[in-house]
Amino acid sequence: MFSHLPVNHPLRPLYRVLSALVGAYTLVFGIVGFTQTRGTALFAQAHLPWVLGLRTNLAFALLSILGGLILLFGVLVGRNLSFLVSLGGGVVFMVVGMLMLGLLRTDANFLGFTVTTCIVSFILGSIIFTAGLYGRIGVPGEGAHRRA
Image 1 (tube, rainbow, N blue to C red):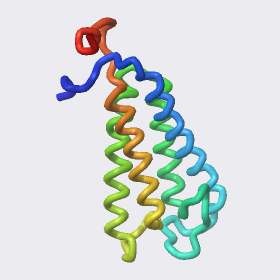
Image 2 (image 1 turned 120 degrees about the vertical axis):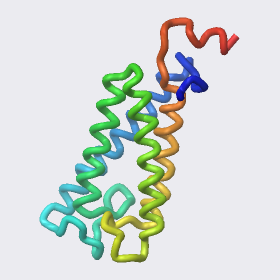
Image 3 (image 1 turned 45 degrees about the vertical axis):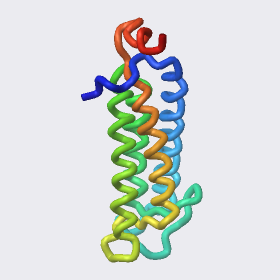
């Protein structure tokens, strides 16, 4: 299934750093969001606080903490786990952004997303997904014949 993706790409460390930065941003966003929304309803939709340029409720803050930890864990462990976590995380960010975009002006907007939050979700998902595309690791020299 992943045979067409590059193996041992020379820019793999750069993409891991980008994935780690997105994970760190997501984790910090979740922690700050948790501290600002603590004591409110889990799925509050009105009068949400601004955290790092985005609105959040307690549920979104907790999910952001979990997502940031998973991304950072995958990057720190490395190898092909980072590749799989980045691909999966990118897809999740983009799908959640699209789902919440469809639910924006309804009572089903349980994470309190705004258009800005959806756009940021798409951008972060694209960065993580791209990092996953170039993060695959194989035996040394496996991808050398493709670069020649």
